[in-house]
Length: 555
Image (cartoon, rainbow, N blue to C red; front, side, top):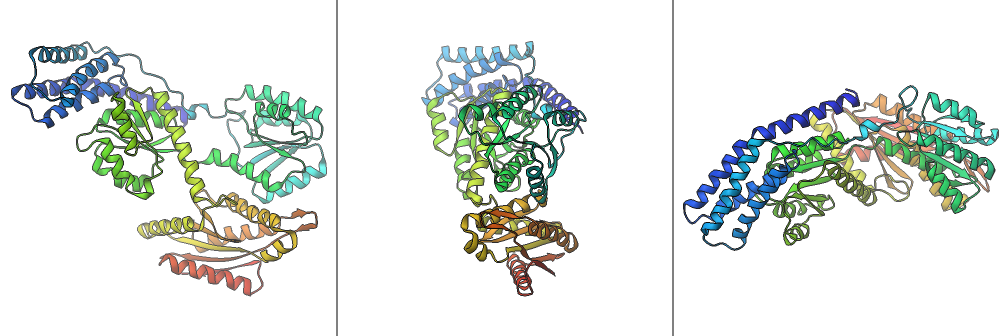
């Protein structure tokens, strides 16, 4: 299904949801009227009073979302009258009874009038994808504008080793013609004079104005002045590097561009007993490219968190089985959910209760009804920060790969999945040969460049579903799910050969480095510790028998 058809389907679902909400309103009002009669029959139990208050609170929060703001405002007025009784219980006076009965009667009349405002339209990222002449954007295709032939050849060869396809242009006219035919994932521009850089930057600013989505540009130049760099930002500058360019730094920026394009959609769990409203939120988020899971029964939440692994949780404050404060505290008891943002969505306007919700595990509080655009903005900003924090906590600072403990956890989870689905799995231990010699001869800064280069190569050459981690020092671990021995061996052999072809330039001269790889593949996988030990032994066997090779074991 293409993006346009998907957006149309979502709009139809949102419209159908509005109709369904309106259709069940008479029943909801009848339920509120019955609840009011129960309260008047005798001295009411507090639970009955709270339940009627909760139903009005829910209506006050949802009616505006479905195009009935006046109905929501009227429900809010009656809700506040009941709230006063919850805060200070006492018998009903005749004026109070009359006021509430009149308010409920007004709710009935508003439902019968059925006045609905037009739906809000939400432009989704899916509808703003870059459009090129052939309506495609090539993966791993990089355009390089470089007038120096020898320098362009060196840069081209180094980038190819990291899995990028590079097309080189020596003048702006050729580049402009190519951009009309095919949009690359990124553009690299290497400038030798300030005049050429100024002319190209002005042209780029004009070019970016016509693009639905900005083309990431990496500038390489000698001029590091503020004015020139500011112009580069205005021209779509994703990064600005000094000459001579550090290829590892350049690859890092290209990988960052790729990561932005290929990152998984944000995941959100919506906890609300009002199923119509929860489904509306889920559809709005889906329209913006965000995956959602609806939970209308709090008892199902913990299982959903484990299975779905959301980036953000949206939660109502008032629900039948428990309130949002209690549920947030329960979720926070699990250390794996401590950093997940919890955003309360509620019609509650009492600041003390809002503060109480925030003090009990909440990160934000949004008052219902919430505009669709604001909902998406809040979720995206919270999810982005949550992922950045998770990345900082779980990733190695030098390579950006998973840390030792995290790669072990990820391997165990993948192994458990392989057991459940009776699937194959491969596990590789990778070690840089003679790394101590590199550090001793060229220095630790160069050694860090070697380690980072291998990390970038692994990220480029492996699938998005594969898992890579830095096990320690110059050792790396690769987990390849659903991959048999033949497929895994081909992939890891390609990585080994590609890494040996990379030349590292230093003041003391150029050099290359090789890898030793121990690969274990299993059709009926055993324990994680056994697989890791076998891979480690295979890797040391590769070193013992001459290095720069791979030893494979099949279990």
